[in-house]
Image 1 (cartoon, rainbow, N blue to C red):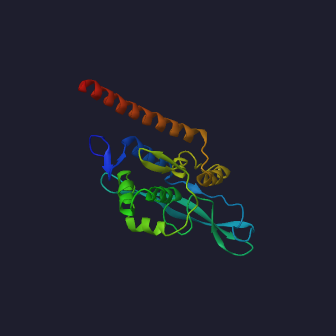
Image 2 (tube, rainbow, N blue to C red):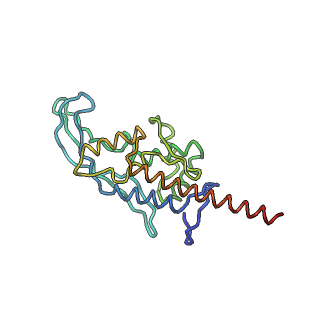
Image 3 (cartoon, rainbow, N blue to C red):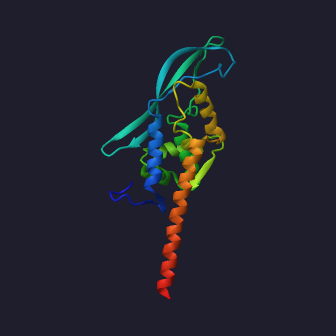
Amino acid sequence: MIDHTGSFVSVKRILVPPMLVDLIQNTLASIDGAAFTYLTACPDCGGAVRGYDMKKKLFARVIGDSSDHDISVFVKRFRCVRCGRLCYADSPFYPGTRLGAPIVDLCIANAGLHAPYQVARLLGAMRIRIDRGTIRKYLQRTFPDIPVIELYGTRIPVSLLALPGGVISGDQAGTAGRAEAFRSGSLPPAERAALHLLGLFQQRDQGKDQEKKEKGKSRGK
C-alpha cells in the first residue's frame, strides 16, 4: 500500500508509484456502473437475438481507506430466436471468470515475473483486492496473448489502459469496438496520450536518478 507520505511502496522489490496507482484507480472508477448492451448475433449459430435482461457483474474489487468497494458493470443478456441460447452482450470479460478481463490480464502478465502470492501483493499495492488462489486458477487456463506496457518494473495490460472513456452507453457500436481493442492492443488518441504522460514521468524519474549519481560522483572526487 502507499504510505501517508505518498512515497513509493516496495512489494518484493517492485516499486509502485502513487501516480500509477492513481491512474489505475481512476481508470477503474470510469467503468463503474457502465452498461454493455451490444450484440449483433448469436455467437453459436449466428441467429438473430432478442433482449432478455440485464445482469450486474463484478468487474474489480478495490481497497478503500476503511472498506473494500466493488466496481460493477451491467451486461445485457439476449435470447437467440433460432437456437434459444442465452448469450451476453460484447463486454470485457473472459468466459468463466468473475472479474473483468483487464484485471485477469494484469494478473497473468505479472505472473510471468512473480509468484502468485507476490502478484496478489502487487495488485494490493495498486489497491485491487484479489487472492493468490484466484491467480493460480487463472494460470491453469489458456488466455489470448496480452499486449502490455512495462512501467516501473510492472507489466500493465493495454486492456486496462484502454478503459477510460471507452464505455459510453449511448454509443453501443463504440462499446463493441472497444471490446475488440482490448484484444488487439490498439489504443485511441486519449489512451496514447496517457501512455505518453507516463513515459514523461518515467523519463523524469530516470533523469533525477542520473542527476543524483552525478552529484555522488562529484562529491567523491
